[in-house]
Length: 290
Image: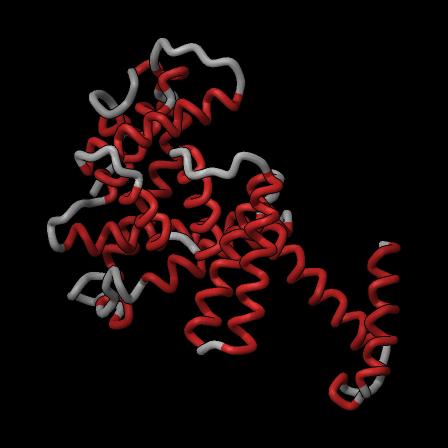
């Protein structure tokens, strides 16, 4: 598969004037072409890599997820070299999936690139069309409206269920919960005020405590899910990001444990609970001062 400036032209791109000049795109396309050829060789029955040859789209799923999370971690660390490296690993997963699909004549990387470019043009009529927008909020609203119309056309229905199901299948549970909550709220499944959400939270907390005390493990699991779902709705009402909040809590906890370990010569397991509590409070104080 060879990329060229011509392969990016109409009907898939907005216009030739929108394309970068030859000098700008050649190094990038050359680098991408080299990656495509390397992956094709790895998958070649004649001299390819045995590991790569036995991979399928399904076996590569864990790597797609892992590489995406490693990109996020590199971005949070703010290390440009690490970001570039991890983005390369993620790009490899895209090219590898496209190569495997090409081998069975399903699609190729050209299809992938054109599909996303066409989607971006459709969903940015204020850039590629004559729609006027007033700020980022209106851009988001237009995007959601266009996406909803596309989903309804694809499923020939006004139901929001297919999109909710897709969120549940394709996203990590916490992210899916927030997406489902937003979508349901826009469809009218919403509390009148945040006070109603707090009431629901306390109701679910009571039911969870009741299940823990008297009911089956499956019922306990169900009630825990209901409680977490309501907590995510509280986050939405207060414009908080539950993923980022939990990530931050994980980091704070890990940093605090590191402070505990640095404050003692013994393994933590050799301390009494009272001793660990003293060390924990000291660590909290140090964190608060940083």
